[in-house]
Length: 116
Picture (cartoon, rainbow, N blue to C red):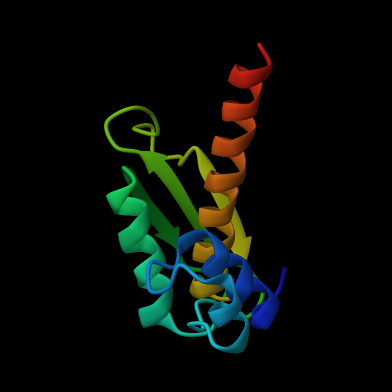
């Protein structure tokens, strides 16, 4: 997924604590995928949920992607590789995609437990 409104709305739906009304987010939402300050609001929310961030810049700017990953505090990932990681053209996109990946994985695990 690329930077833009669709990614911003997906992140807003999951992480926004500003308004409980989804309808409000359709008309306005933070530009998580294009604004670094907004992306770090997602990082702060992930920290509140118990995850730490690792972000890597491209080895060759303009050719390689940015990488972002989240790992639960004090559980895993101490080998330097986050449990949930994604890449993107910018650090903001990588952060957004990695955070959404964590939420997707958490929901899948919860469903597995429920189904068992």
